[in-house]
Amino acid sequence: MIYFTSDLHLGHRGIIEMRNRPFENVEEMNHILLRNYNALVRKNDIVYILGDICHHMLVEQANELIGKMKGKKILVKGNHDKIYDKNLFDEVCDFKTISLNGIYLALMHYPMLSWPKKNSGSIQLHGHIHSDEMYNLENKIAGIRRYDVGVDANGFYPVSIKQIIEFFGGT
Image (cartoon, rainbow, N blue to C red; front, side, top):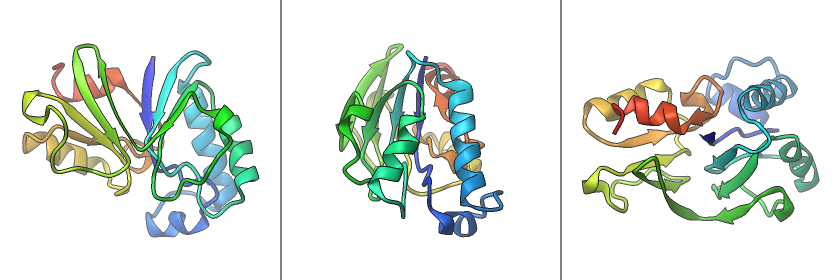
């Protein structure tokens, strides 16, 4: 299976209050986000992480948490990402395009107004804005094929390619 996620902000105490995340403290947040991630992702799954895995923690601590995340991880860097241990990822980049199940996807940490093949049915996946689930629905209603894969918009879980394709009506 192929998954997408973004903006876990592991280690970031302030994000709990800033985004009204339902966690008592950063330790609980880290535990639940990693638990949710690993509940879906298996060893051979591919996960595109669209930035901001960790924030306000030492690189060594971040590497330890990232090492607990299952799957083959591809990092599309966000504004808070550091130079993590490259052995934890199959690839690290700033922007990526892929084609899955006949659908072209543009992957970036930031939302874009325009992206490759936008007028040919492609979908842009991003994070950064910490939206809620209404953002994705409002985009869909407006005919905008842009989707926030961040944990705040997706019940604190990664999103599968199947879920995204079904969300946009199967095409």
